[in-house]
Image 1 (cartoon, one colour):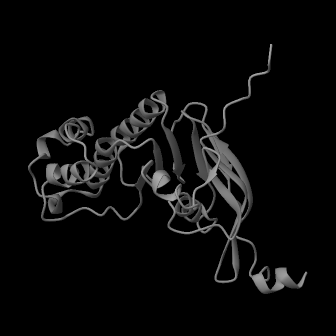
Image 2 (cartoon, rainbow, N blue to C red):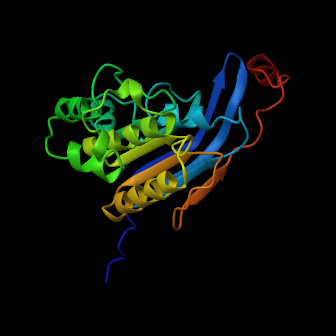
Image 3 (cartoon, rainbow, N blue to C red):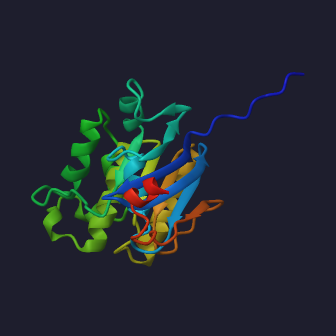
Length: 225
């Protein structure tokens, strides 16, 4: 019988490095994530967790190496737009419309995606059902985070890139976060999470990023070696 090739990882970082303003932020990162997988980015402030996510989100490009999606470079023509359509991005900047209601904030992004019918369920799941018609400007920090997560659920993209998603959440909110990540993964979704707080994710891989390299390791000095 012919040998069956193992499936390609959905995402593969191949010897990826990142240099910003002459300083090494990430160096020689190799990691792969398959459907249903989870990757936790751990490390001190300034170690490059957000930079890592921003490269995956296509906001910046690696200085060396490549990021592959289904075996194709994510920045290649013809691949870039397809890949971006797979991403659910959640950053510390919540991009919430203050004068809009909770429902309008989620519904706007759902309709922009060409989808309909998940906004109310997502808001209720995140414990904001009673605030559905309240203006977002009156929400607490924890409620704003729940609103971000409701938006993520309603848009329903397969690859989640989450930057400190548990910040400002209470214990119940963290449990909800863990639940929606687990359900997302059961459907074959991927979660890549940058966090300095504990989040329970079964069989998640952890990539520990070291403290940023000393200032003497500038691009100029690397070229001189």
